[in-house]
Image 1 (cartoon, rainbow, N blue to C red):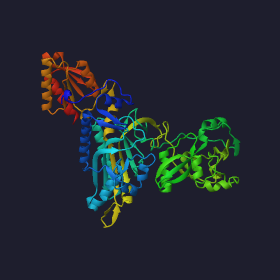
Image 2: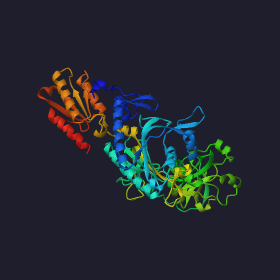
Image 3: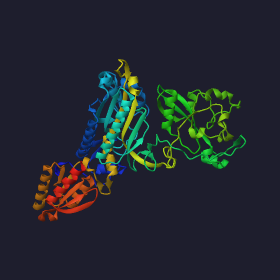
Image 4: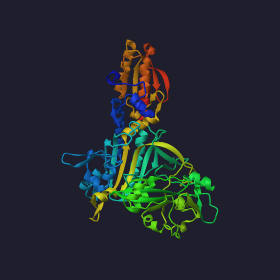
Length: 596
């Protein structure tokens, strides 16, 4: 390929809408162009990168025995309504683009394909003898992001590889899950990117276990907590830890004290001269469950801890057996809507001996009451006293009328002890999610009625797994991890070209002829080579070569008369003056060596 035919348009100025380095460089390097918010065109250079990533993914997926397919992007609402996900994906802050066709049928543009593939599997895979089976595809997905940003990192249209496996037993699912874990590690290694596998919450996809593959990067949207030796890593939503121990509250006589100017835990602990870990704070919220059912919540946390809403949502789902659409702070309007009486929120609830609040007991019982483990473990503590500007001190759980459910609903924090090795403390990193694998269990097969005939001749639902890689996001994450002030330096395996030949003065016949000879020789050896044949100044060509990040650059310049060229390694920033044959041999050796 010649640069003069590449439609290469590079930018010297940083686009105003670009926020992180990789986004800036892909725009400046002529890899992508914004069409509208969250929607990008992949220009020829970018498409070459994406095709190479897709090829690596196909090779590794095929090696696991997975079968490639292509599923429809338009999906009927009926399947999503049957699985119970239509409302959550299309209403409120739902991310599914949806429409009504001319027959008044509701359709959605696929953000994911669990419903479609599960329905198809139920029609096609009828016997245990056909299992296990894994199907995968690479296609465009659509998600109506509330705030698309960072280029391809969070866009509304993107390329994704998703795979789905079907099994007769849970053990078979676990075996394939491990096989996919290994395949993903190989894929990312071959793409030349460092990833950190972390425990993750299954989110809206659901299932019993999941693992994310994170690219460590300061610009990452996800917070990861890891042990000091990286033997434990988890997304903040999933992370567990051993918190710092609470300071014991000296035994004292129970009493209610006035606490003016104590609108925060910090103010309260200062006024009472107590540590935040000795206080129980209460958060009053309301959960919207599927079916537009509202559930008031009264949440108890130790004063020095913060709420993890993902963990809370999972607890609510387990207790109510209904999926949580959203959790929001309770408002006066919600109180009225639910027929609740106004009440000085901030208290755990009435004491067993409290007769003043008998009238309020009816609506107090409507609350789902959940306490974090750290709060429930306090033997004596400070909490609200059911009236404004008053708190109870030296109270105990056994004196509270309504006992909460106890669970882990707190955020693990940097500095906490690692559960797996208390000698180590958790540390925080930022990360970009590029892959996610799930053990779905029977979540979708049961609700969609997708079954197979087992060895005993009985029908039972499939065990299922789900495995995704954000292909376009992965390409940008590679740039985020592989760039400098001058531009990108692509790993050889996914670079748009492996070598660029820069002829310093294309109008010099000696340089031009030598450049053409090198170009021909490298092509004969199946090297993906780009020849910069433009009538531009040498400095412009060098700057563009650094910006677009081709791994090796052969410069044909003033030493062309002697048959010598400069070989430049983009990533290592090293150069050598070599004869043309030696330069070709070294490049071929480096490229072939990188692919083994």
